[in-house]
Image 1 (tube, helix red, strand yellow):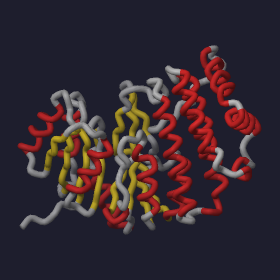
Image 2: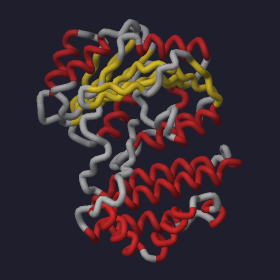
Image 3: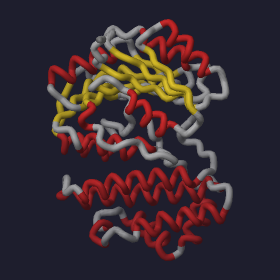
Image 4: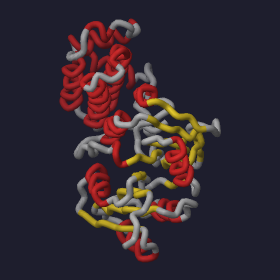
Length: 336
């Protein structure tokens, strides 16, 4: 009987025939060889499914599941149930990885006895490459310090693909029918770890296919991003983690709520829909206490006051300023 692989790599696939071969070949080329790759074809309408089958026929470490389109979260969850290894990695199907990424992640995870290990990444955009870090060293964080970094959304990001996880920390699945499904989920996995190692060398290539500062006019995306931030905050409170920083984290939630409400006002294609989601954000923010607003800058307190008592005025003020070019876009750049 064959031993299970050391690492299971999960890749959801949907209409990426242009990029998929580079993704799979970068995994096959890994210097670390003891892995399985689970390709979940999420009802692709292009040639992606056939590409998956072609590579699986050539390499027994590759498994393919074809299913109806139910979204990336469901694809990842199904692949987690299929995974044979005790270590779990993720690679998105339009991205690619450096050939020594998993060797570095695995060695660091075992040497530091960590439950999660992170590497730096490149943001590939319009033939330019932007590294997230380049200090060429490795550090080990405590759980609480790593959580502070992931909440700050600066050094440590909330997406799964530049990381390797021990299965024991994965106790919740990705929520379905929710934008930014990994934003709060990865955070919860961090809560279950005691040691998190960070290789400050970029090894993952995130291909940014369109500017994250653009908006398709769907306010639901902005609202979901705010909900994910609020869920992280509530999760900390409910588990009594980092309670001494409650006010700092609450102000992060308020800032995100104001930012997403502004984006909805600026980009929403339908007034009624935009107002509906702005009022939804308003209701959620109303659950925070007065103390949570204490250290906000004055102009943000004013914006919050207008949002609370005059959401229609807030909507038109933000929209008019944007149309007149009086304010720059601060659309959330998820991968930065």
